[in-house]
Length: 587
Image (tube, rainbow, N blue to C red; front, side):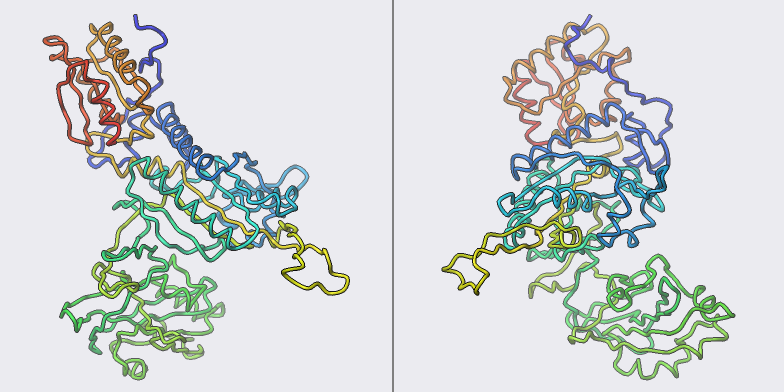
C-alpha cells in the first residue's frame, strides 16, 4: 500500500470517461474529456478538481504579483450591486442588456456585477478623505456575471467567469500614469512567468471610460480580436483603433463596390463606397476587396449609432423606407479616399452602382441625402477597408504591418475621474505654502478638494485557462505551462511497481532540495494499464511524465517524456531531480 501522505491520482476525482473523440477536437472539448470542467448551463461551468487546481495556481500567481510588485491589498466585494449606484455613474443604460438584473422582495433593483468600478469607488469615497491615504491599491479575485447573447468557446466567452480586478487611486494625473506603467510592468511579469507570448496592444476604452488603455492578447487562430503589429518598430494596437499609412493606390471607376448599413434606431441608412480592386504605385501589387474587408471601426466615428451586428442591411432598408411605419430619415454616403475623385459627383447618374438597392421601390425620394468627403475634417484620408498584412506602418517610415488573430487575457485602463467624480470619491490636498502662492485675504490655510485619479486593471482568470488550453493543445491532449499545470510531473508505472514508484517519488522530492519551487508531483496508482495511463497523462497535459517501464525492470532507469519539448530520454534515477528541474525552467 502507498503511504497516505503521497499524492495519488486514485484519490482525485477525474471523471474522464464517456466522451467520444470528435473528428476535430478543440481545446474546450479536451478540457471536458480530460475531466477539468463540465457545463451546467449555457455559458456556465463547474470546475472539477483538475480545473480547480489550475485555477488556484493562476490565482496564486496573479495575487503574488499584485502584492509583491504593486503592494496591493486584497479585498472581496459583494457580487450584488444596486442599479441606483450604476445610474449615478451613468453606465446602467449603456450595458443594461448584458446585466443579470433582479428585484428584492421590497422591489429594490439589484444586479449581479459584471465589474466593480461603481462599488469600489463608492467604498473608497466613504472611507478615504485625505491625500495622506493615497496611493491606494485594492484588488480582488472573484466571480463576475454577464448575460452574453451568444456564449461560445467555453471559458473564453461565458456568462459566469472569474476575474482579477485591481483598482488604483492616486492624488494626481502624474502619479496615476506612473501607477499605470507599474501595472503594465507587473502584467508582463505575470505572463512571462507562464511563458506566454502575450502582446500588449493599445486599445479603445469603450464603455469603461478614460482615454488610455491596453489589452493583453495571446496570439491564436481561434481569437476573436485582431492585433496589428509592425515588424520594424513597437507599434502594437488593437484593430479597433489601428490606422495605416495609406499607400498611393490606383482605383478605376469600374472597380467600385458598396456596403450598405443602417443605424440601430433605423433612422439612418448608410452607403460605404470602396474600391474593389487597386494597384499600388510603389510595388505594382494588385489587391482585391469585398464587403468582408469593410472595417466597421473606421465607420463608427462617422456614424456612432451604426448597427455593427448587421452584415448586410439591404433587407432592413426596405422596412425602414416603406409603409406607414417607415423610420428612415436620411441616407449617408461615405467615400473611401482611394476612389477616383470624380466618383462621388457621378454617383447619381450611375446605372451599375445605384445609390438605392433595387429592392427599394418607394419612400427613398423623401430621405435627406448626405455625402461625406474622402477625408476627415483634419485632412486625414478615410480608409474604410481592414488593415492587411504588408500595409505601411503609420508610426515609422520603413515598417510594414502584420495582422494576428488573438485572445484577450487582460486589460488595463487609466480612468481618470470617470467614476470618482460622479460618485464623490474626493480627497483634500494640503494648502499651498506661502512660497508657492500669495493667498488672498481670508484664504490662508484653505485646503483644496479634488476627485481621485483612478485606474482599473483586469485579468480574466477563466479566460487564461481557456486561452492557454487552446494555445498549447495538440492532437494528443492539453499542454500546460509548469506555472499553472494541475501537476507538473506524473509518475506512471505498472501495477506491480508500487514500492518502486514510491522510491522514485521520494528521490525526486528529496533530490530537488526545495530548489524547484514549482515541483508538484503525483503518482498515477489507478488500476489501469500502463498504455492507458500514458495516454491519459498526455490528455491531462502534464508537462513532464516519468515512466517506470521496461528500462526500469532491466537497469533501474526511468523514461522521461516531455511532449512540448519533444523529449523522450532514459535517465538514471540519480540524475532525475536535476533533469526534471531543468525541464521545468524551460516550460
